[in-house]
Image 1 (cartoon, rainbow over the protein chains, first blue to last red):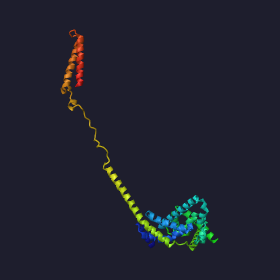
Image 2: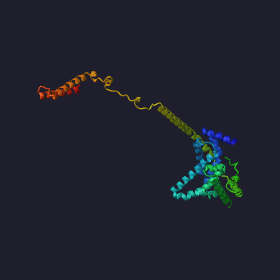
Image 3: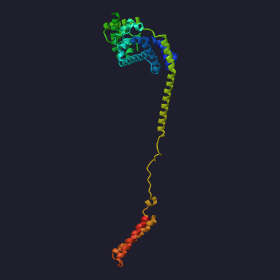
Image 4: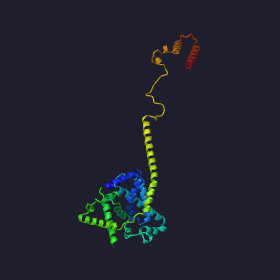
Length: 177
Length: 173
């Protein structure tokens, strides 16, 4: 309870334009949000970019936060940013047909040569479809309950449960296989 | 709304599946999430975090100015609306001179004459014309009865001339 009271105070500070409160929010959520973006994109530079965009959006949209789960609200923005990024990537792919294979390998099949610490999990995650991958990462990094996730995604809780169970089961099989 | 820590996965699955399946599903989820925990994602760079904080600090004054402008516009709009509604209430936008309360009728003929039955007494000209007409009527009657001195054509012509003159004088006023 004390934690949620603190968060409420910080959010009030953010609404009043207090930069220290925004810094506190960044400290509290940067790690989780970065993990969310990284596991979805598999790329450090893109994750850096998306994380910056998320906190810029936070400054712009904090006035529209009307209570409820702040984590759910923030990760909803993160989810929108990720899907916007995907759409822009697809547009780029269409425009640059010549570079299509290069872009695909960059984003969907990460390699050690990218000078990044690519783990087995990241490779197996690319075998899942985007929606399932996003749902698993939302559940893991947002730390929201299933009810909150279903609300964030505007779908029935049964659908969320079924999709997540299927996705996690498949991921587990891939990781153990 | 339950937080994730208070959430009972088995109970949640039991709302859709039987007890055995629900337990199996809950186990699947917990084991898969354990794998995710064992493979943490990289942490954001400290420089990135510093840059983000600097960017936020830079954007805040601009946002405050934007919010101030936004509020000022809202207040101005609200004030304009209040003034407009008040003005409508006070009929400030009524065009032209004020409308009369009712139709007022009047006559060019003085009320005394209009109401009097004795027209000859009210207008001297009318008295003269009336007397002349009566005189002519008598003369015409005399002629018709043959009481004239025999020079009938001349008398008729004279009467006609006289009538024309009277008519002309009448319209001249």
